[in-house]
Image 1: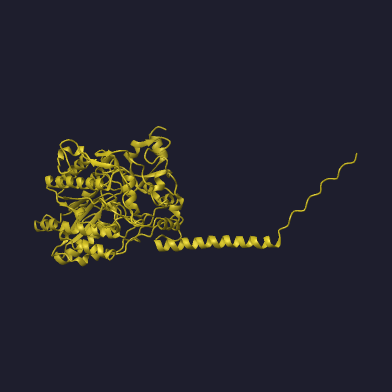
Image 2: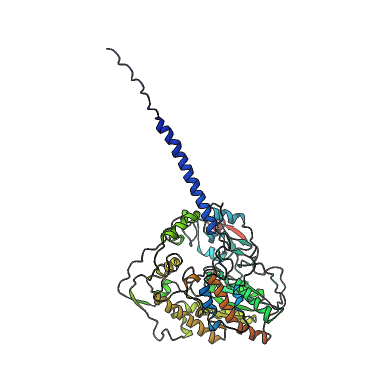
Length: 534
């Protein structure tokens, strides 16, 4: 039997001349497309105010400020309000802008945390006692579970054994978000601890609506200082003003109370101006008084599929939102359209506890309305602390941009619409307006009962979406209006105190540095685990 011949290898098909020409063309087209995409990304970064050559998007500090002439029709009407008219005030001062705040270097550890994609919260200083109280061995703090985190926290030891303030801004740094923080962890320029003679020092306290958007050039307290200096130059030569922005994002009244006691009062301030009213009026607090007729429909679909908040809510790592200015611009293009009204919501009404209604204030029953019991108790303690130091506590009303029948444009008003119809669903715009007015009515009654000056800033703020980024936070021109409102409404109290010789208070405690703010320090996860016996 003969052996069949072994199979011969078949010749492989050779690329045709056409295919040989096509492959380089495809490769070239791919390279050109990538380069064009990168070029487009760089152009959009520059136009939209981001640093061009960073891996993650880093805003150029101060980019969101079109100056005092932005929305001129809105500001003309705002400045013309009778409540803001004073013979000793020149409306031209509204355009006064402070010199830029020098930028400070980012600590290497903070830069590494940012580039690794960790949330900004991991570059703040955290109350060490709070972290110990909520620490879960092996997994870290119970807050932020599921979020990636570095292997150490920046921490501080509270002056008294308290869980408040829960965290503080870092010191002497410009964060990637664009905000510059001085050596006290306060937004704005550096100041001397010891107050100079003939200087009136004002501390503005609150939360994110006091800090203001990190990307605007100046917060409302910084602009307020410039307005006061202009007024002093004309009316009280030789008198200087210093305004401290002692706000911090997410703060409650209890965080603010401890901030005033331990970080503000040691600075020989003359006034403490309190502005906050949203962090303790969240959806659950509104819902406790809301009675609905019928079933609650599902939330409407939210515009802006690349929105950072939506990504966080879904527990996703939104890479495009963090790294691509072109993707963010695409989001804006996709949501263009006609003005957006309030979606359909069930019929509803506010129902307060027996013996109370929207026109009745009983300060002894604050615990029965929203979270006013906690807020008013904290204000009482602040009043005691400031009065003991000879300092004047000033309370302001809190402004919400919401009213029944409100329309917003899809681009400028998307975040306003999203916040009201997501965070507060199913509360109607009318309900939110009534709750905001209710809270301010109690603030005014508390101030009147305690003899505390009350500035009704909410009554004069513009009702125009160009002044707001959402229902409570302000654009650059909105912050300028806020500063002007506080400026004009504070002047009568200031004039009375100057005439009585009550201000400026002398600084009787010389200090080389703030007595309650030591240098920053880090504490590792391993150290926290060891303290929990793991």
